[in-house]
Length: 252
Image 1 (tube, rainbow, N blue to C red):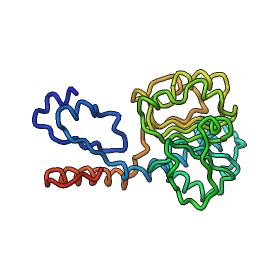
Image 2: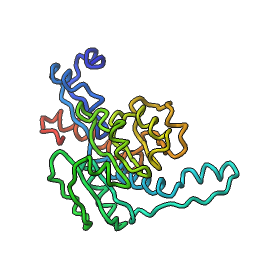
Image 3: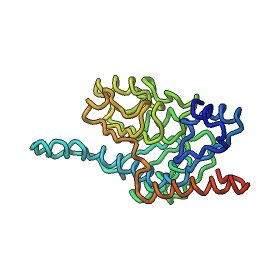
């Protein structure tokens, strides 16, 4: 609202990225400012980072790398992705891509959840719709792909985390604030969950206690950080601006 108040000639906000939680949509509507975004461009990169986090955590690659850099040689026994039950919560652009990628690994069971059971990942893989609670209890890997809204804020807190298997892996490449960071630290500090991959945080840059937990793999909100996807995001943002000033309908 601060920026909008001072941008007296502001007519359009183009969010370069997939989320709109950083834009006060009500304030924009009150001021007659159009808002659009570029959700398609970053999706391939985020989905691939999600898969990479799964593989890293299952094989403790990040821990082995850190120890070897410190002169410690240790071989970790891990699990293969094909042997895991995977739960994907949020079947939008990224969640459906993740499920399609999983088909290449032959996962023995994939459970999906969304508000509307209409998404079809066309993965060639056997997958099923399930309630979130079933995913929390039965999945070996849980991957979150929902937007940050009032209903998803702290969607995964202490009770949800404690439902998960003691050796479950949790991935969040969507938005900070969906997984309650304080609760996550508390349950992990007690030994619950074998690994967690977090790319987005409630406050960034992140400087919280999760950084002290070795089996917590943290990345610096870099889901979209591939050269092709970043370029496509900028291109799509510019195209939206051109459409707006040409009087054409916005794509998003």
